[in-house]
Length: 504
Image (cartoon, rainbow, N blue to C red; front, side, top):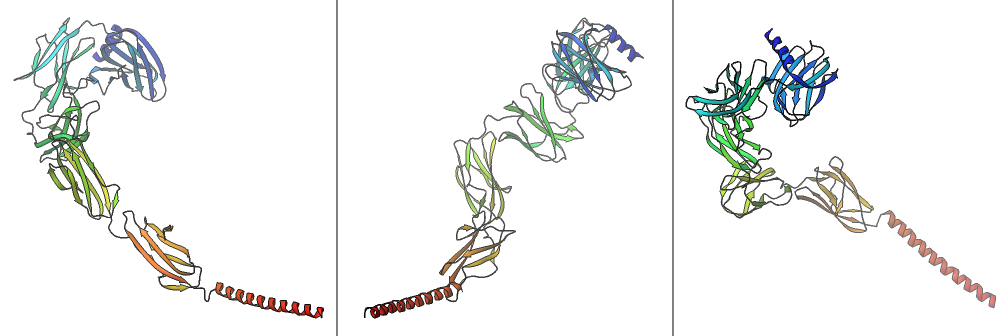
């Protein structure tokens, strides 16, 4: 009953300066609310026609801040068929009211000022031996004020953890223990509400570190550095889970965090940052252990050049890698994750022995501040010549045919040529018709793989005319020529005889 009375009190007391409506028949809908003037202690009311239905409401400010039951539960007051969201002091601009729900009917969105003259003039937080001291100055103090203090890992959204919940207090402040927190840096904000439901919020300026004295001890052998453009953290520990945390070095707002079971972690430098503070701690039952922060910057990465042989394939078991730099750097190298060079202080050529198969080589150049650059090369080594088999050995054969067939098998992926002319294969088999000229024919069949290994087959094939069809045709032609010559001579002699007889 008191809840309903409170809702009606809000509706009566709020002076509504805007009114917007829409019809929602599907699952989602949106209203654009144009606030033409600044609004002090502004309250949105979203109401839908079918009061027995439930709706999810999200309000987005012009600068992208979101207010909803999940993001800002402390700013929400719910009723049957309606919801109130206190967004505080706002400037003019366009707001989006997004509504989700089935069969809501007509949805209206109203916004206006709450008639409250209470104001938070100042709110500060400081650590002490007895806990944390909170001080505030509130204008127009009244005994019906309700004070809540929350701890948050950033200064956005008012979605922190409640650490103080009390009735009327004077402006002398309070000392409290922030129970329920895990180790970390927190911003605190105060929430002040009055009897009609007005909400006022104010963040403290600086973040304060909270550390449970009974939490797990710090990890050992912690190293934080840049790895190319990423942040690399390593440590020693003996628990199942660890958490890495990244903070803004100026404001101490939490920028990133991750849970891992490994004892090293790599994550990108947050966008827009060149340096951050990084920590890592045990993470047992969702509680952080003790930790310190280490600052790391990407502005002082090593400046080096590492030159590998060209190509990704080779038939050599040894390669030369050249490393050049000008500075106090050290060089390390791994081959298939096995350390081969450990913190050499010299630039120059390095000989790396490879094994047949896939090889992953990584050269690491490290600066004095620990920042590193990696230079990675993947090389496939194959020192075995490819298979090449012929169905029939053609070497030293004699034939009267105009051609011979080269038929056989070779490995997939090879380049197969015959006397430097490419031969196509089908399912690794080939059949090639090689033309012969009269006499000796040298045939060189070559199978070469990607790494340059080559298998050759050489044959000498002699083509003879004797016994061939061409030879028969030549003999017949020769005999024909002889007969033609013979008959030509006889014909000429006969003509001469007839000529002499006619004269006589």
